[in-house]
Amino acid sequence: RLGLSNVRFVGYVPYAQLHEYFWASDIFVHLAKFEPWGISAQDALVANLKIVTSDRVGSGVVHLKGELSAFLVTGDDPVRAACVMRRALITPEIAFSAAWESASTLFTAEGLAKAWNDLLRRGACPHRY
Image (cartoon, rainbow, N blue to C red; front, side):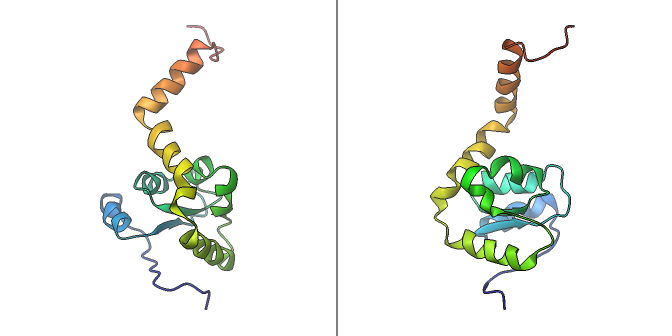
């Protein structure tokens, strides 16, 4: 009815089992009504999946920048979500490379330590200890 085939909505999957679904998937969809970060969406990017998230999933908003923001949807519009899922399926994988790079480098322990170090060196911290 919405033009999608071979789609499975599996519902909640325990975090320890997500990798099994990542390897069997072409895209990861996370349409939460509220998810301050959403590590599963970031992990899907690290696994080189295309993602579609609601605009209430923090990691989706952070990593889907520029043209990729087209893959952010409101959580209350299933027809639009289906259209965006279909678009993600036909979008060349290379289009998601910036999001993959962001998730794989910026938000690792090493990447965050470097970012904090750079901020502190520039004097970005107003507090003196």
